[in-house]
Length: 400
Ligand code: SF4
Image (cartoon, rainbow, N blue to C red; front, top):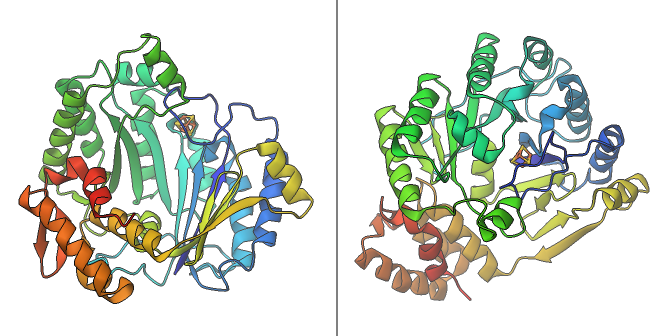
């Protein structure tokens, strides 16, 4: 099983908190699609013929393009790689399967999960009609909040009504596998405002919700605004209280927290993201996209002109790093601890040897004493309190 990620680097405007590679200009929109098709050809051997079980179009905002244009890229991918379930009619939209453990978890043979990130602004009756003619069978909507003041702070261009209408239009068209993104810890927000956003999200009966704390990344407009006191800084107490409200309401509504930032109805996990946490191989296409083949990680540059020129001339420009066993161990610990499947010490023993296993056991005992981590049959999980300190706990377990 492998995945393919396609990065579309255009947005209608640049959100102040965003540190993804995206441009508000659409100058090279057409040229970019041609370059992307060429990159698919140039990287055709990267996955070595392994079946592709997930494809994810993210960005940026892929929905700056009409669905038919994105379908053409999908078709180029399917003509080059073995996308599971692809036939001359494309993919039949399908449902997810439930699974009990990270090891048991394998995506269904048919069909591949094919996700499209969409901005709520772009969802119209005509857009959805065209989308239904494509192979996308999972939709990720960048809602961020159902509160107009929050959306104003984030400088998003859509309204809460527009987001709700987008979900309904997609559901009426038959999409069951819909995820929405939310952000908490927004300065000026409150328990009541966050409660209303969550109530609205769960009432819409989507299958998946990704929820991220607002982080102030260096170099973003938000960071600049906070430094000059033009925006209030994020508030740690607000973040913690809103996180607790989120996890309580998720349980009340029957959602599983299968990863710290990801909640779904049972069985409706994102197979693509779960693949990253499982260490499956993936190919990234487009500027800034990362790829991994089990040996090395490589990433495309973030200069759109260089990307377009290089790919057009048949030269791929990327940086590459071969992962050491220590780096692989660190990545396994960091990602697995964040999931509900936990970090398996037996796997650490098998894959990295007894000295690493003994190191892990010794280090993790400290977090267990503080009741941040608990263990069942050699598998270690973050406690509810531990989830608030996931990064620090993982780094305490790292091999330097
Ligand atoms: S729409 Fe998304 S990718 Fe584009 S600028 Fe805003 S946060 Fe970044």
